Length: 348
Ligand SMILES: *Cc1c(COP(=O)(O)O)cnc(C)c1O
Image 1 (cartoon, rainbow, N blue to C red):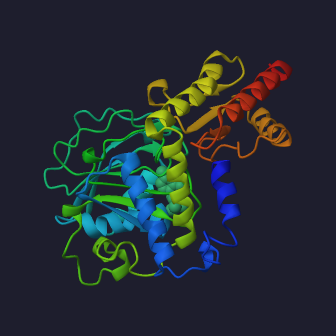
Image 2: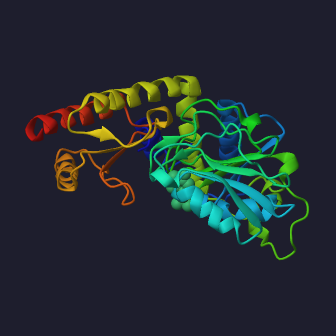
Image 3: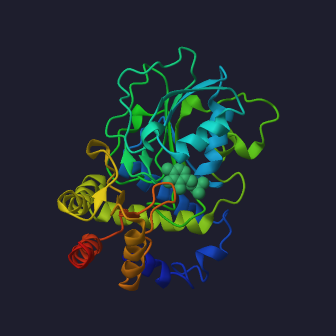
């Protein structure tokens, strides 16, 4: 979900954006009004995440999935990369990278259906690896890296799609971090890449498509071609909403509070249980099961009838999953927990 004040403001500006006489959807991306929108969005994101000057912020398309290819295409100078596989998204990124070079899986949690984050303090990092890749918050499985891996000096690349702006981050620990905005920021169609300048290669194999070179976008302020203008505009509003509500520290506090309401209930429930090792629990995605598939299905159906939607778990985990992204209010989590309590009383 998106914050309601953002949607309301967008609605007010729908027909006439600040006296321009048109909707943002109708503007030329080369107009002054639009340039101000994208510049403000970038400045606010830099401010929120304290992105250092030697990092570029790129607003791209193609979703997070396109980055699975763009990262190896641009970053594999030695043709070698190390991947830590903690779920489907990391696995897909790893499969894609194999098309471009040698890929080593240096840790995985597939042995227990990705229900934990492996110990990454002393991994067999490949000496010639160009980068170490992680998916920081595993959307489907509900795990999160609470500590970044020890990359032994190698560049860290992270997919933060489902934890983007959920808490403060130290950007300097990464060479590149990126995410599709549709999980925790804005509408589908925008992917944000934050990349250290010196990692943007001047030379890539000549057959690399122009649109898949980071340099194309960094040299043109994300406007080599028409960017996803309306999506970036909404993202910009979400950045302002985050700043007005206290920034990422305050957001992290609210997210911790929300998640603990649900986790505390799960830990004391006789019917429901979480599926993830406690130390690795995500603040954003909370999978849980009853242990009985029929009961799970009934729960999802009855919850939906009560207005609690999108609770069906991913097919690879089963059961339920509550995605409690930034814009989900505490009241939403409380409503879910009271519904679960009532369901437990009836079916316990
Ligand atoms: C959803 C998701 C993706 C895929 O995003 P698309 O924008 O649909 O390509 C990749 N990584 C993570 C962590 C996700 O949650």
